[in-house]
Image 1 (tube, helix red, strand yellow):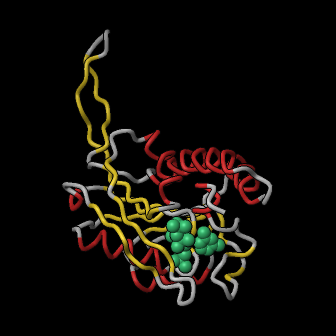
Image 2 (image 1 turned 90 degrees about the vertical axis):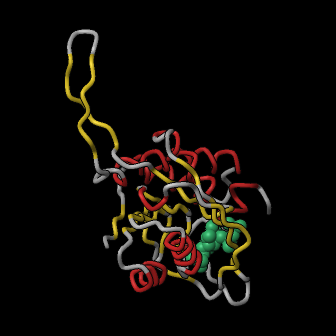
Length: 207
Ligand code: PRP
Ligand code: URA
């Protein structure tokens, strides 16, 4: 298992725009989409490649193709906003969905939807959610992916805290975690501080 904070000036600039409370829902979505695209470079660094023979207009040559199918699993709702950017750069990826919301008192995830894709056991699987707070939602979504047969799993988020990282390390030590920021604190209401507020509400304009 690895834990990687992807640091890049463009990501830092866009994440800062997202954190600002006055940022509109439209700008929040656009920046999330763009950060998703920028993070893809690092997440796919070790994706297995196969050599293939192709023919250019000039001659035959060897090229490369991603060996396994790619499956993205957004945790609905907020994961949807980050998945679009990743899919832009990997347009052949399939999308499976897991719907979870946190119980506001217990902070435990409640499942309301799950839809797998074919061949998930043979795929390079990426579970996507912008927020890794207590880690309950990510852990549950990864467990569901494993029940579907997924073996080669990565988890990507925008903002994380140590509690969530530790929870994933304990529950899923085989999963690599990628984030754009490890924030300092999880407050008593389960919000990341400084964070960016409720990601789902900011993406969908629901508060
Ligand atoms: C948010 C977020 C994660 C979860 C993270 O979703 O998108 O799924 O909280 O918190 P955790 O690490 O403590 O589980 P939320 O439950 O607010 O649902 P939503 O996406 O529908 O807004
Ligand atoms: N979910 C969010 O959307 N934001 C947080 O800060 C924590 C969980």
